[in-house]
Length: 124
Image 1 (tube, rainbow, N blue to C red):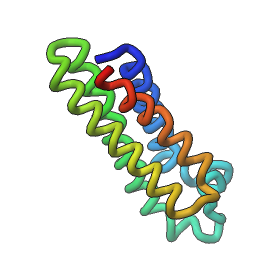
Image 2 (image 1 turned 180 degrees about the vertical axis):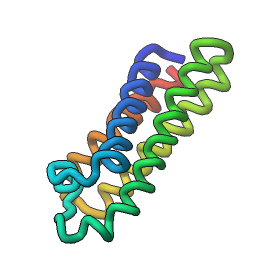
Image 3 (image 1 turned 60 degrees about the horizontal axis):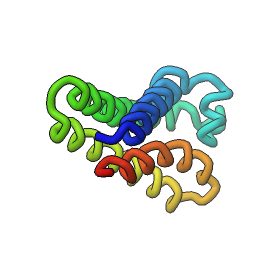
């Protein structure tokens, strides 16, 4: 697997771990839930959804990073398949976020740019 794709997949995984921490661990902090456009008054209703969504992001991150471990240690084809699946899922989620609310374009770019680069170079 191309080194550019590997670095981009690594960055994508790390970004999604950061998003996991924001959604599942730090969401109660005012600066964090405000980042997601959630008002303090809505926190109790939204927190369970954010907690669950954070784990989705963690599992995607673990897929990308686990796929890289397989690429580095044993089987380029199998590892690449896992990385491509994880990064394609990340990119699809970013596109859904963008399509659902254009004001989330910055967040969608943060979420989707590294997976897009990884996919663009995965078969180069």
